[in-house]
Image (cartoon, rainbow, N blue to C red; front, side, top):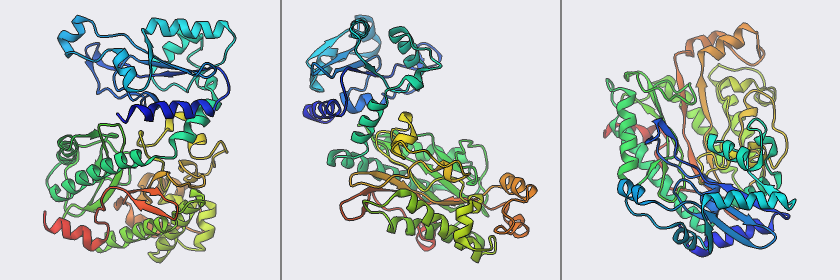
Length: 462
C-alpha cells in the first residue's frame, strides 16, 4: 500500500469530479476453479485497489458524495478462517490504513444502499466484469444482469479515467519496478531458448523469473513459435532452428502495477536474411512511433505513422505496391498489422479496459469500424503522466491472406503471389513501456536488446 494520505486524497479528488449521490465500489471475491475451496489466484478489482488499497476478497467501498464520508465494508475472519488461513487485520484496521474511519459488515453495506435508494439518491456504479458483481447489483439495486453495463454511471467512469490515466510519481516508480522485472523475464527466455525445447518449457522459465523476483504475471504469457497469432496461449509446439520465437509477457509487482513487454528472437542463434528484413521493418516502425511521443499529440497520429512505415517497408520487400499512405488510409496495411500500436498501462495491463475503451482511449468519441484501426485501444491526445506501450508488429497470417486473396481485396496494394511465399513466416514485434513527460517521453524499466545485432549477441551467449 501507499501512504494513508494517498488513498484519502484519491477519494477526495474523485468526489470533486462527481455530482451528488453515493459511489458503490465493489471489490472482487474469490473465484473457485472446480470447487469452493480450490480457487484461482486472487486479484483485487483495480479501481477498488486504487481508492482503498486493500488486497483481500469480500470487500465493498461506499463514498458518500454529499456527506463527505467514506465507508469500507467487509466481514472479519472467524476463528475457523484463521485456522486455515492464519490471522488477518480486522476490517477496521484495514480501513485505517486507507484513511477510512468508518467500517461495517457486508450486510450493513446492503442496508446503506437501500437507504440511499429510498431517499431518491443516485447510486453510481461501474460496469461489472465478474459474476459476483452482477449478482450483488441485482440483489442490492435490482439491476437485470443483462442491463448492468448500460446502467453504469458515465460520470463515475469519466471521473475515474481522468484520475487513473495520469500517473503520480509513486505510481510510475511501481510501474518502473514491474517493467524492470518484465525485462528480466524476457532476458531469461532469450538466454534459455534453443531448438528441441517446447514452448511450455520456455513459458515455465519466464513465470519462474517473475515469481523469484517477488512478482507474478500481469497477464497470461504468450510464448510461441507462431507469432502470427496475436494472443497465442498454446504451449505445445517443439522449437525449430529455422523459426523465430515471440514472447509477450509482463510482471505484476506486489502493489498491483503491471509491466508489459514483447520481444522476438531467433530460436537458433541468428536470424535468417528474410527474418532480418521483416524484423527491421517492424523495428523501424517501433522507433518512429517512439520518436513521436510527446504531450499534445493524438496517439492515433503515432499509430498511423507506424502503419505507414510498415507499408513503406512491405513495399520495399515487394509484398505491397502502390502509394503507402493511400494503402494505410484504405486499411490495406492491416493484412500485416491488424491491431494497435499501444495501450494504456497501470494497475491493469490494458489499463481501465473494464471501464470501456471509448472512455479510456477515446474520451467518449466513437471508434473506427475499419479492420485494424478498430483494434486501436488508444487514440486520444497524450498528456504528461500517461503510461503506455509501443508495440507495432508484422504478422503473416495465412488464413487472412487466403481470405483477402479470395475476395480480391486491396489488389492495388497487395502482391498476393509473393505473399504466398511468406505464409510460413510467423510474426514479430518488440514492445516497450513509456511515460509521457512535459517534453517528450521516458522509457520505463530497463531496455531490452532490439536490434538484430543486439538480439543475436544475447543469443550467442546463451
